[in-house]
Length: 341
Image (cartoon, rainbow, N blue to C red; front, top):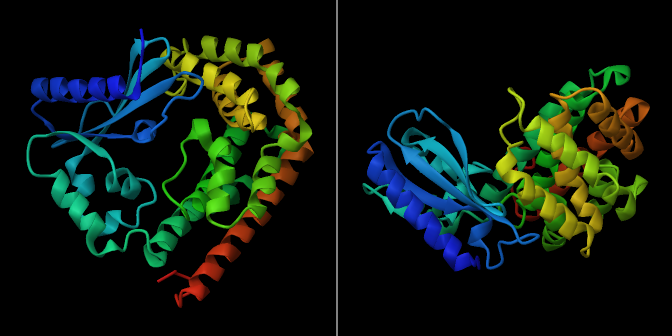
């Protein structure tokens, strides 16, 4: 089966129309994510990110639907209520960009044009005041998570703590990414971060970002050696009750082929993020050898014991550096340093 961006877009539109026809609670549907790009494929795989907007609270918030082993639907659902204040959306680091430039797939009533027009009013969305507002909100999330990590006993660090650390780092990196565009999703985080940092004239943050995930402790061959253990853990965890919904068997190729492609690409250690992040989530519901294999990898990355404490301290300094960047941008544009307004 030959799959192109155009064929995936057609599937998205047909899916939206079919779902809306059978569910009168759906007000609108739009496409977001990688299919908005000219080349959405990574390792020959891609997902179709569709957001359905409902009048009332939907029973299911997230759903994956397999199309082929390499392509699937990633369906999210939101309530119409979430969009009632487009002015507030302009300062939202996630939903703001999600609504700023998606592809409309279906509309039952006049909803989309009004929200988007309000969001884009005055061409202010990408200007420093609103840009800094979104960036600071994103960084604030990372800082709040970091504060919780300072209370962690290094002797008790495990998957739960490492996952939390990675979440804090994820928000910090995306706070920088939003200086030049929308946030980066998890599969491509370290792959796209260098270019986004360069676009924001912050290339000095790239080395720190990779160091904070432990990339300076390993090489591509070492990471390649982890792929089989990662896959085994992911596969087993995907069958367990209570595992994070992202660890779904439908998404195995989506991650595996992307990881292998990155390991052979220009930034091989960018593969560390999707591999180790999903591995960490997986072993939260596993034990025995699967846990030990992850533990060995985490130790080599410097994410356990005293190494974890050092990483948390490093994240503190990294967030400080980003805050300085935001303050400088505020001063350059005659804005209040504390708020960016």
